[in-house]
Image (cartoon, rainbow, N blue to C red; front, side, top):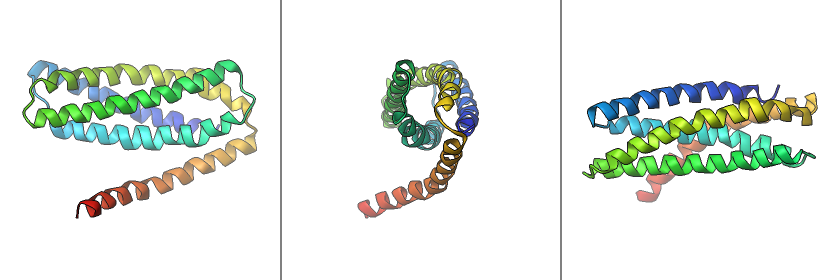
Length: 178
């Protein structure tokens, strides 16, 4: 089934969310934040959960589904999922901005970071369940086995290009500052 790799990626995202929950509990207990953890969590969400995972959903699966005679229910769900991806991007950006303010001495940003981490930890399980249980598998009925095989190949090609895209962007940022 073409959505199997997406569902496998969900398991890794769930593991990161569990780690974020534990870190949020530690922040609540100690009143301190490890900025390097926030940086790594943001990197994971931006690169793996959003660019890699959501990228395959939006750029491949959803585009292919858009051309199908989908039910109104699944079309609405797909639109909701795209909006949820946007919401995740907003929360992740806000988490990084709050971390930067915290590092620069704004102690009030601690509560904001904690709130955003808790919001992300609450958001992802619901989002993943919607995709895994209520969207991905039923939507595979819109595709032939051959179309699913082509989609699997497109997912693999997307993944092969991703690392090059990420680090080309890193170099371009350094060059622009240079």
